[in-house]
Amino acid sequence: MIAGSEVSLRGIRVKPGVVVNVDRVPVQASPNKTTAVEVSGPIALAGTVSHRVWYTAKQPIDTGLVTFARGAHVIGGRADGSTLVGDAVLYANDVMPGENKPGDEVISGVHVRCDALSLDWFDDDTPSTLTGDDSAWRPRSKTNSIWLRAQPKTGSPAVRLEYPSCGDGRCIMLAGIERRAGWIKVGESNEGVTVAGWVPAASLRRVPDAEADLGHTYGCFGDHEGTRFVQAFFAQDVGPHDARIKVGTQIYAEPGKGVWATVQEEIEVTVSYAPGDFWARVHQMPGVTVVSGDAYVLVSSLR
Image 1 (cartoon, rainbow, N blue to C red):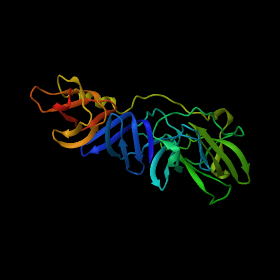
Image 2: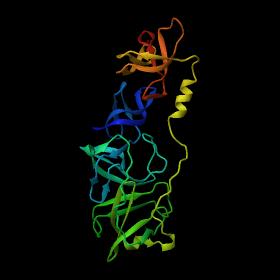
Image 3: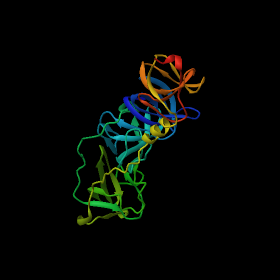
């Protein structure tokens, strides 16, 4: 189980046809290919997330070839006992908390203890710990991945550094660290993740000093999930107004059917209903946004 107290998460399926996003609420997750989540706070619900969830290192972690500073991120893949197997994120451009997005540059298949991870999102401010020899290297072939080994010998334990969006090998640039006969130790450190390992010298080519740039470019492209759903959902009814919902009120997918959440604290919401209606449609509520399906409560639960 991995938890967080102010978690944002997209795409939680709570009922057939009902999908919600949550924002800054307590969440517990049982990570796997399909992740089970429990949301508490003002509104309690349970569901599953089919996409890969981002987790944050809540303390320094050393897995051998890969180290994490506090605040570094790993994208979950599957559970292996008490560890999470996923991708350590070396570079992620324009990713917001809770989104369903891949990392731009990752180290795949890394095993991390679940008790060292959090669902809360906080960024790393630790400077790079990688000490190089001022040389820079790229894969010799056109590829978007490269294996880094623990020792300068074939068959030694290894991790795979991947740059999925780049296929010509020019996006991967590694700092030189050490050289031995037929092998070069290279590495990279960014966003709190550091990796260093050995690569056959024949698989690398040195980057001319004038072209060597071990940094990354960041920008915002505006492709984020969530806000458009709030606007579309809100616009479907006319005349919504604010109300408060009593503690213990159940939220339904349709009038009288499909309970998918329970109100834990008296909260203010935006609803719409006509005089004489038994059911009110909920448009907005704290910490939860409906992106697919509906939310209904009994009018008698409002005040």
